[in-house]
Length: 100
Image (cartoon, rainbow, N blue to C red; front, side):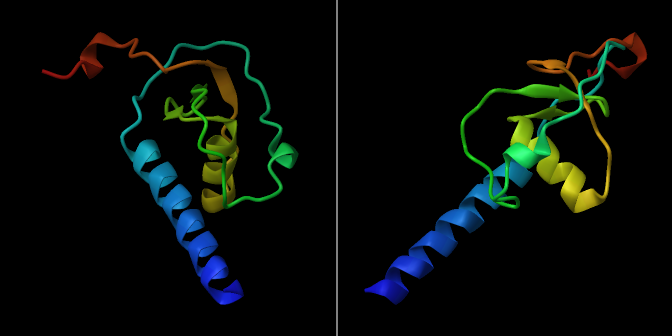
């Protein structure tokens, strides 16, 4: 019973990570300049496992992350220093970047 519960927990962690990566890959890009906030990554001690609640933030790299933990996960996996530009989706601001 204990081994089965451990495997189920691992599967759910893999699902969380996979879902996070997929959401990061499909995020919108580009944002305007604003004051940038340092993410509080110490609030997420279980990285690489993030909660699945959705409270999107726009990173200074122009990517929309599903929540602050996923931004911290991106920084952790890529040795990056992306900060929070603003809450919500990133918006495209340059007309030459429009998709047709």
